[in-house]
Every structure is written in C-alpha cells, then in structure tokens.
Length: 288
Length: 311
Image (cartoon, rainbow over all chains, first blue to last red; front, side):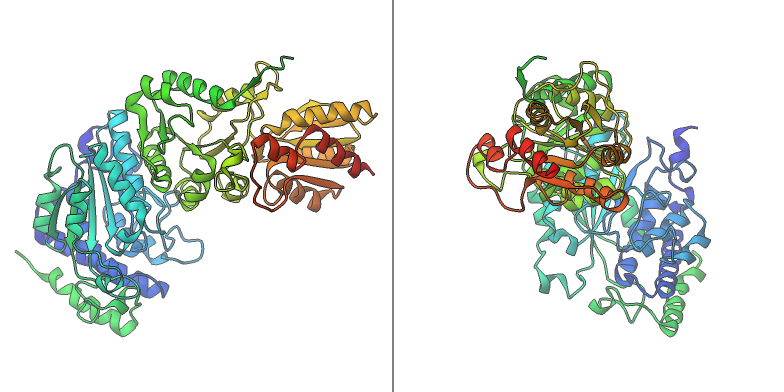
C-alpha cells in the first residue's frame, strides 16, 4: 500500500463541506450525550471544528490500517470530549457510525473516555488531564529516532493547562526542538466550575507557550479555512514545536449553551436536543 | 560459588547497551538520573536514543508511552521512589490501562538510599505497581538474573516494572539462567519450611537456610522475583508440602510479595505464614545495612522467623 492511502480527504478542500461535517459531528455528539445521560456537551461543541479539520483535511491516517507505523499521531488529551472525538473518528471511517448509538452503554467499546485497546483510531487512553502532551512529546521523539518522520498533534483543553505535567512536557519539546509536534489548545475559557480566568488565571496563555519555547499563534478555532491553512503549513518555525491557541466558544452552535459554564457537562433533554439539532442543521442545507 | 558482590545496576546498564546495539527500537529515558541509573555509557553510545527529560517524572512516564506509540521500545529509568510514586497516575493510565510497551526501571529500590531517609526509600512500590492491571512486576535477585531479565524484557510485549537495588549482592542464580515471567526459581530444596524472597534478600534467605540446616531444619528457598504474575503453583506446592511459608522482601509488609502470597494461601490452602519486611513504618536514620538489620532482614532474622513459625 502506498503512502497516498494515508492522505487526507480531497473533499476537505471545501470549507463549507468542513463546516457541514463539523455540524454533523456536533449533532452526533449531542445525540450521544442525550442517550447516555452524561457527557461533556460544551467541550464537544467547542472542539468539533478543530477535530473535523484535523481528521478530514490534515492528518495522514488510514482507517483500514489504523496502526500503520507511518501514520500521523493524534492524541486527544481532553479525553472527556469523547462525544466529538468518537463522532469524528467514525466520520473518518475508523468504525461504523451506528456504533455511536452505544455511547457509554454497558460493555460498549465507546467508554466515557477513550480506550485505544477497544476502539480503532484512538492513540492514547486519556481522561485524567495533563497526560496527552507528554505522550505527544514521546511520539514526536520516536518519529525522529525511528526515521518515520510522521507528525504528532495533540488537542488539550485550556483549563487542562493548569496541570503541571503539561509544562514539563513543554520544556522537553522545546529542548529537543520537536518541530513535528503541534499542540492545539481549545481555548474556550470555561472549565467545570467556572470561567478559567475566574478559576485560575490562564492569560496570557500565548506568551506562556512562547516563553516555554513554542512558535505560537492564536487562531479562530471555528474558522475552517483558517484552521486548514495553518494546519497544512506547519511548522510555524523550523526547530521549534508549534502551539496554536484556538480561540473557541464553549457550546458553539447551540444558542442556549454557548459560553455558559453550566453546559460544561450539561446534558440536553429531548426538547433541547431538538432545538439544538434544528440550529445546527441550518448549515447542512446550504450550498455554495 | 563466588562470594564477590555486584551492584545489579551494572548488569542492567551493560545489558541495556548490548540490547540497544542489537535492537534499534531500544531507547532510554531518564529524569536527570544519568549517574544513578548508570547510563552514562548508553548516553555516549546511543545519544540519538537517549532522552533526558530533566526532573519531571510524570512527563517522563508519558514520554515513555509516546515513544512506544511511535514503535520504539523505551526503558524509563529513575530512582524507584520518584518514578513509582510521583508518576503513579501515568503508570496506571499511560502504561497499564493503555497496555503500552514500556519498561519501567525503578532503581535503588527498597531502603538502598539508607541514611538519605524515608523520602528516598521505595518500600511502597510493589504495592503501587502490583495493583495495576497489565503491568508485570519483577525484582531480580542478582546480576545474573538482572541480565536475564533485561534480555527477556525486550521480547515481552506490554508494560513491566523492573525493580533494582544498588546494594551489592553475590550471584545466587545459575550461570546461563533464562528468565521466565511468573516462575519461581527453587534455589534450595527442603520440606520443613519454605522461604520465599526476592531482590537483594534472596542471598540472605539462602544464608538463613544454611543456619536452619545446621539446626536440622530443611528450608526450601524460592526466588520470587516475579511478583506479578506470581507462581501460584509453586506457592500452593509449598503450602501443601512444607509446614509454613516465610516471605522476605525489602518492602512494606503491606501490599508486596507477602501480600501476594497470602492472597493465594488464604483462599486456596491456608497454612502458617510470616511476612518479613518493613512493618508499616517510615524507617529511622541509618545506612541500608543498618536498616536491614534493624528490621530483622538478615540471615539470623529470617532463620529466627522460620523457627518461630515451626513452633
């Protein structure tokens, strides 16, 4: 099999298609959380555009051979947003969409937090925060040692950056000049209990990453064209790891959930689910 | 048998260098602990496969998991006290739960750091690691077994915790020994009492058996280096064919080798037992040798415990 099998999807050239994909992923995630009666709606919505752009337009992966050694590695450090993550893995073809309906059911492969030994496409078991970045750093070091030269991406939360292990990993990434590593922070400014800046101040987050040796840019985490353009032309600076602070809105796309701390792990009831699906479906009808 | 004593770390590091020369996947990760893990030569010979993350154990274990994700075979090495305690959640999730092919090398375990104090002692690490699914736990008895264990570990797919002391011990295992996970090794036959030991205390268990033999008691001595998986058949055989079991470990008496043996004995074939180790306290100030004596982890102390058990 040739490396071309690992290339992203051609359809992803169209930002409108990406937007539609992202909203399908949002709708699936919402249905899953509603079904399970538990989940992390706010972060599923804030991260959906980033995940969609990565899987459809950027990552070189082969769903038919999920452990191909040449594949790009993506580590979902914010494992609690499994609703969006499983939806995008399924949309990319790692497993049938019908499996999403088993989210958190007894003995389901779709655990509340991802398990690489159960579900194809999952690279790391995450859930406790601050685990993904060290794993991604190790993965980037392995790409260099093994000569496979794949790329490593990791998506973390912004509240998650309160865990000290992230900054340990930053020091290693910068010291070893891991420019095949890209850290994306889902900067939705809300964590479980409150807004991040009312909990433990994270700003100025870009300056922190710059000080730790990352080539750092802020980006609109809901702008598919901008995300695609940046993620397709990495690294920002040779010899340095990349950090993208993706400014996002928690609960994005659902009018009643946007930017509301209570929707961190709020679960939509049937009426709210219908309203949300209606709002998210508008773009699905659009044509260019 | 030579009475010369060897630091198992030397066998560990020379064998790791040999393995790295043979297998391009082998890498080493340290937390500044280049000297205490004896990996200076490794660093010189294989700089591209040597990662020093600095003093950052949580990151170190995660980096190990990431290297394995990238199809490398990392040996993550540091003082056992920091490696297993500071990074317990990473060991649980990134190695055990993820079933990552990472070898965790806990150096200077037990009370090897002696007078540096309880912060640097690692008498809880069997308990921390033994409870984590998928993670094998092994404490070799001498340099011969350390080399055999290292050679075994490259072919074992999955996480392992290798617990190594810095206290020199004489070689007790036969030359050419081939390590087998989950197998006890009988070092001395006997049917009066069984002494099960691991790590640096296997040597003392054999010495205790000599003392007992002089008093007419024939002790079976088993090297229980493999704490998990553990040799259930050898334990049950000891329970059935000898009059009691003494376990000996440089670890808390809670949650280690003694606990593992007791779990099997209590449920399947109850027999008298004594669990020797550190009795649920932080050790006082003193050298490693002083502390081993203080807690009765000597040939005399082990022999006394065996006699008491036999009544």
